[in-house]
Image 1 (cartoon, rainbow, N blue to C red):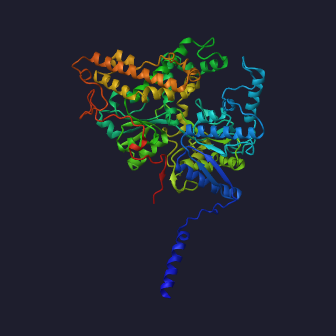
Image 2 (cartoon, rainbow, N blue to C red):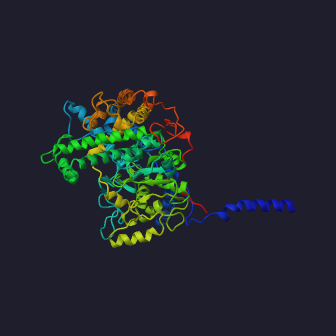
Length: 638
């Protein structure tokens, strides 16, 4: 009897433990029949966890019920767009067929066209065919009813302005509210002061179909111990610093075809070189006025209106080429290219790479973890002053959202003060995250210092709880944004082309590139090898010469895979030529003349030309090193 009673008491205690140690959330648990929200996102697990929990609590307080957020995390922005377009086309086609409408073989291309103009019939298209195309296009773009067709997903949360613009042009997004009906207090204060700008310094932060929720910049993470070992006395501060031959074999870079943030970082490098060329030509002060005149004239690309010197456009084009050559030199110094952008910061933190390109919150978080909170630790992150724009990660309502009202409320939450706190507050602070410190930057103006007394008062209130003081010059996103002006005409039309070009120029021909660069260094460096450098830096000449102007239309004129193959063959050949020229220019007695700049060699010393402390490898499998943790957050510690 006593034994049975003891067993019963032990079982009762075990069953009671979850209730004894359960943390009180202040709201009841989600139950069947409560609202559901389906969100597709590239955000990491920490962001999904904190925003899912915080939105549910907010919704319960404001509307009486918690919300179950069904997160769909299938990869980065590229994978997400591929998935969404496939789902929309399949659903729309099924709806049309159910109505007894035939489906055209080119139906997907028509409804997803970024350039289709329903008010302008192209020449050479029969009137009946044009009418059928127009009806199909308008049927898709004019329908926003989940009962007819839908992706069965409510929101796209994350990505960048490029992805938001792309999804808008594809017809996947719709405005969450009619004009003038957005909830008050999200974009402006009661007194009419702007809380979330439409954009700053050329970058778009919000449009009627997407709204930025957090902002970020791009920069360099580096390891001070590795710098000293390689004889680098000065820490990197600008992109071109990483082109120094002493970085050879020690940079960690991510594949821009896999990482949207790194693709944007590479585009930023080209943008900076365009600005430098314009300033060197004496047009820096007039650039904004010239760009306004060019936009108003609406002339064919590359043609300048009266009042804009031809030399101005020539400077832009020269800077564009300089930017690509700078990226090429960074790739020549690369230890590897990886599929995972988070691997770069992990390797820099551990000293496996000396430096790398990264998005700001990746670098800042890993520096904090690696250094144990010590500001004088080995790892550091820097945003190049005047060398990086400030971009927004938006949230968008998808066409045919099945839970439209709940989706609107989520947008209202993330743009409001309570949602913005989740990005930047410390774990456990009032209104902050409960488990993970996301260490990201809010987009609202009232989280940053300002001359305006109302905004400054709000900033002082928030700074007591934020993980970092957002008033520091290198963390004040509004200050950084004003130090960099992004001029879209210079580089925005090449976002996709840059990804493919970098793959051919730096990755698929990476072994030959690094062999040529090593031979040039061993022969005395770039200044000693002008012929080799000329061969190294040539841009593709087939199927036609790649220039600022021709690059705008290459993606439409040629098959993408054919271009990649053609470009890769050319780069491999010219890198082999550059290596031969470097050895010839160096002479038979130099290190370059005696040995091929092979990738398997490893010197026992570093610090002299042509001798390096690390083997070089081309790594596209992110699993070869320590598995990358979810970046941008830290788990709360007791």
